[in-house]
Image (cartoon, rainbow, N blue to C red; front, side, top):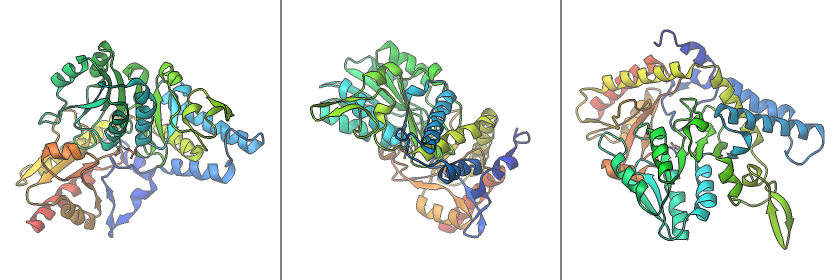
Length: 408
Ligand code: PLP
């Protein structure tokens, strides 16, 4: 399959991939943390600052109109990519801010004493802490769906929680950043709807690998970060169903989100402006739209098959390493491999891999509750993207094997 996949062309689009790391060719395998940027995304940002930069929503001169147009077109392009309308798409700083927005605006007004927000044990802190803060304020509780030994969700527990009176919101990742588990979202959303439970999706790890039709998926909210989808840092998106956004109060107050301001009281703009207080990250939005334009020229199904091939090759290569434990073994898991090796600290492993030019992530991956469940403090994680090669997967395997022989 990889024979048909234009890997060399794709790699040549990403300038950073030609660099060395500690004097060796860089093998960047930390894509779940942040992905690299194609030249055209970098160029779109420089071009904006070189020729269009001005504040939006305010000026009546040419530059301001051009900046406004670019910002509007970026929103429209991204909304179209996800099959939603532009007024349902709010620009934020990233997944974390998007989830805080939902929790504080939607959550705070919908939840009351004794109500329940359901999350899972595999969630990133960004999908736990905002709910904890809001639940504490309104007297609601968080209920947690356990993860089974293979890394899948305990669907039985989820089903019974969805039926419990007081269950109001389910907030769930589409793909786990630590286990690679792909949650069967369509089924879960249908089940949540039957029980009148609103569903918030953390799409940080799914958006970079597949084209998602949010209209078909049917969730109420969907959050993701630009920097993981080959776009810039500091920009992200929250999608919300129009009828819900219209009823939601602002999250942050300030310029650009108002209708009329007086000391007696203030009225607010319609969504999405109501949720975008202050000067927005115009260059970030333009860069993010360019990242999706780039992805539109790539066969993402082929890319996903290619990434899965790298995952399979690494898993096979690690077989037989004494004390090797893979965390998350569900079939069809995303192309990331989280693992521990008995007696070897992940940080030591990562340091040795770094000396071979290989960048992986080690730590708790912002999933401390999941680490407690797995009984570890940290794991090592290699995560693949559309530009990684079979050779890089092979280098990962041999570098890990070499590190094990040095560290034992
Ligand atoms: N959710 C998941 C599943 C993630 O993997 C991440 C980042 O690693 C986040 C949320 C937070 O994303 P950001 O730091 O871009 O806000």
